[in-house]
Length: 226
Image 1 (cartoon, rainbow, N blue to C red):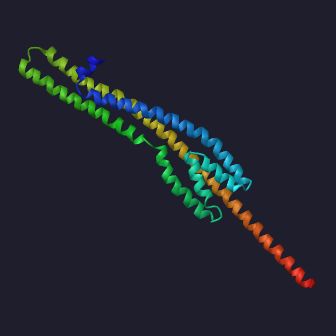
Image 2: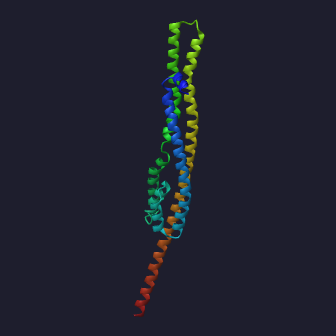
Image 3: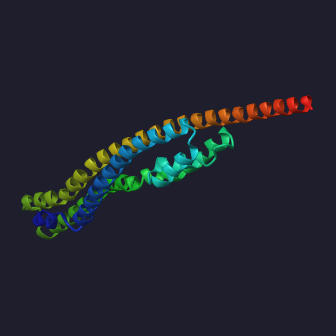
């Protein structure tokens, strides 16, 4: 392995470092996204049930205890309960703009690695070709095996760069798809939360209105009896 690296030139090492970074990001993101998906599913169901029962304070408390992005987004909407649908929606959108980058963290690094490793490999090949032709210039063209050997060594970096870039791009697309699905699920859940909160607001206002009417009727009856 070390012999191959030495033949490929010094640019083999930064390509190798890029591969280690890509692998680290892949496992970190996979574990994180899987954990978020599992926790969010149970959490969202719990919060919706609390809101349906009118237990807004308990729903807020549940959001504060949960470290997931969806809990922070829902908390923003719950904190605006009673101020109208538009304010709840705006608060949720503002919070989502802050939390979505958390889900997308390090994906741009994967994209960069997928783009630069073939270029690093190509650059290494150019350096190797220059070196090979310099050898030919000194030794002459009487030995084609020298040129063939030099070109073979020069192409090692391109092959290595592509072997890292291809799986990295596949990983990037896969993780991006998972993040996009999580975001879509969050959007659906937040719309449902806003609908539930709006329904609770209407119910509360209706209850207050009925109480006022009943209070007025009682006061009228008292005054009439007097």
